[in-house]
Image 1 (cartoon, rainbow, N blue to C red):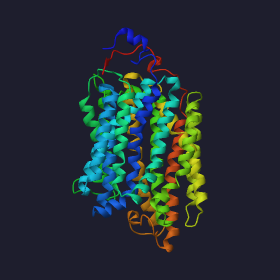
Image 2 (cartoon, one colour; image 1 turned 90 degrees about the horizontal axis):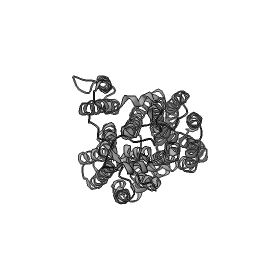
Image 3 (spheres, one colour; image 1 turned 180 degrees about the vertical axis):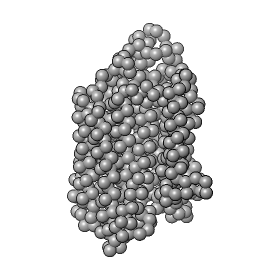
Image 4 (cartoon, rainbow, N blue to C red; image 1 turned 90 degrees about the vertical axis):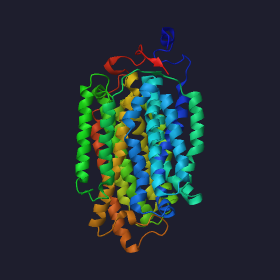
Length: 511
């Protein structure tokens, strides 16, 4: 138990007076970066996996879909587990599961076993993600949290870009198995650093809402599964008794029942709905959903164009993202300092506006003969956008979270982000199919040759036009983001109810 003297001396955080939070954050960022890279690294290896495991497109797509589902569904629960059992414990458990599952993925010899191993990987990732944000919320003062969230946001943004590049290099040089084997040494180093540097934080002895767990998990699963599989079934019947729209509608109904239950439960809910009374938390969740939706939906038509029309390899195509990564890395520390000093509306407006301009600009350049240097210019501008979105939205959404809800708030935020990615993936797939048909190209976009030789010259123009038109979907998402962040309020640097975050703590037990 924490003694009164210790509580007073640590200012209510359960930490030594001389504690430095940055080393702990850097230790956790290693694991966070690894799982985010895994979101995108597999897409580059899909053709090799399909060939080596002798499977078809419909089966190999589940290597990504299974991970995405297993990652998204438990996030609300795993955030709450961090509050109950301690973010350090949940982080180490998740990192262990993820690392061992990576070894399993690399050693597998069948598509079915690989899909199962990816499910286990996704569960490990779901345990890790909310804990990084929770530790930031609970160990950094609210007025200085922007710089910490800048690192978190830069990690999320850079990982999105590094995944395809790293995947291309590993597949081209060592084989697809190494996109999983590379996680093993990283996971071991991350585990050792976390054991040594991440603090043991007070846990909160809350009741656990098992009905809420079941309703939230089932609702999210049905919606995500329906969206992921909609294109496969042409948004029609899955079987004789249920259709894709009915499945999604059922998921919405179940999730609505979950929200109703959260408002009715007598004891502590899985998701405290009071969090959404904080306008910035609500808007931050909407904003990150738009960012995640747009980035996911932007990458698919761009890589189809680069590899199909231009005939570039996965590595060469992914390197076109390098200007975005470089600008993001350079700007993130400066933006992090601004987050603590200026109104969040100002930074996020710049982010969403430059993102919309960059996507419109890029869509106009998608053509069979566009010089490479011209494609790099909107990508560099998009790096400015990412720097002004990931960290400011994260810091603004979580700044006023009460300490006892840091894990559940992080779980809600990351669930929103992940579901935004699922929606973006499903929507862009449907839009690509529609635009290909409208431009006179028949057949599934999934059969377009992925690398090397490109496609016949006579369809390069119409295909480029289809990809250019599909890029307007992320533009719409960014415009919605502009409207949302207009309603952001200046943070008060206080917890809910106006209590400073470093005020006397709630009753707690130490891990």
